[in-house]
Image: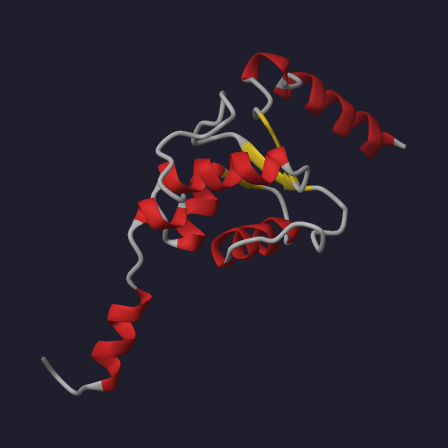
Length: 122
């Protein structure tokens, strides 16, 4: 063992994923994938007691819309853990998720160019 304070701090920061998810391996919600967009909903989280990771996740999502993969990257947590935490926050009504807009539903580039050209002529 070492008496190095930095080594003790690193050991204290190491938390197993099953501890963060309270032993759960699967989210309570279906349909969360890497490209699902996470949106923090307006509201007060004070009635809900959140663990530190959920608090960080919620604060991160309040900064803007992120994908599940981006949230996992920012929090340095495995995707599975983030999905469990997100489903918990969805169950409490603090966040919502949605699928990204499929390419088939996006406007065509030609149409957008015609709109820009029309606006330029004004």
